[in-house]
Length: 255
Image 1 (cartoon, rainbow, N blue to C red):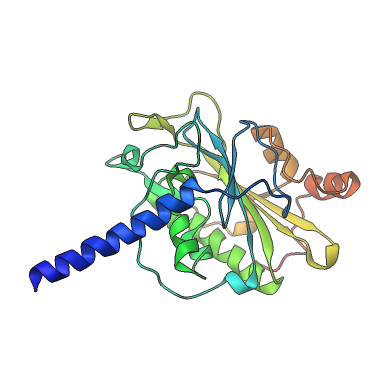
Image 2 (cartoon, rainbow, N blue to C red):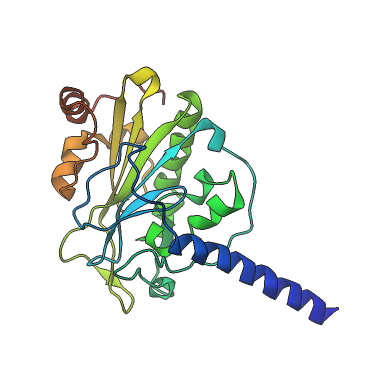
């Protein structure tokens, strides 16, 4: 019986691993489906359920972007898989072992909780290109509160588009043999395009937990663009883009 149980668990783990690695090897072709940001690295990868721009010098994504529809929201709890190297990253994505005993969480950028609508979508978030070093109290605290609020908006506005990442710059602290950068700040930008009338809300947070209300972290998108060199919504009409990216008003969003 012990052998049978071990054999079952072994094959179950192997099956989970093969699903993740297969997904990482077979990215989608270029897509213009969403309002994707520009890339400062020239290395954009389109997975089945999110896209990313990978920064080899920082060994993580400078942004991860995805649509979160109301239909994506699910309370299904899938078994947590192993993290796997994203083999779609041509320069080589960082290994998960860089995080081992580092004192930092493997912080999801596209949260697994946003991809519970299928096991494949959920497991795809465990590719190492989708993680960044995060302090545990930040990851489970203010950052988690923001992720939950985004799900609330996805339900209320029948879907939002999300772009998120760390502020990557020179001379950051690093972890592991591959020197994975530890961002001092993280950002999340949420676009609601209901009825073709886009509105945007951007958050910039220092890498520490906080009890402050979320609206205290709202900044203009322009500020994050200056920090990152990324143009976040280049496909928008210029007049609309300039207007919404200069604003830090949150009055049109339900908190």
